[in-house]
Image 1: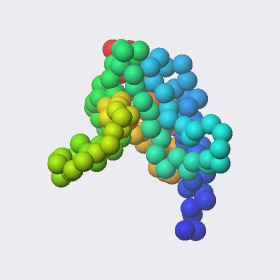
Image 2: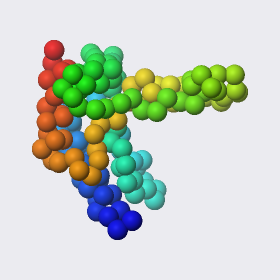
Image 3: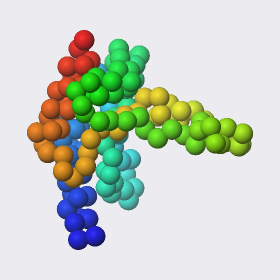
Length: 131
């Protein structure tokens, strides 16, 4: 608890750096807090979405490229109704959670991630999508 404010501040800085460095990458969006209202995200995770029709590559292409460079990333959480343990339970969906799971990727964003790490990660993303 003693370092909570520092960790949240650092995660917000990391998020802002990803936003700046990924700006203009076609089909890639950094997920941000909603505009307006009383929101103050702690950006515990920094996530991107990849629109394959626009980008020309998929979230999985990015994940595999990062993995090949020993950079850990992961898809957004699998929606509960798609998990085997809940397959027979009723669900009320509109396609949003499935789309986010299909297109979303969590990037490294822990408080020990340096600005140089973020620059390197984004360079590797850009290198991967140019192949």
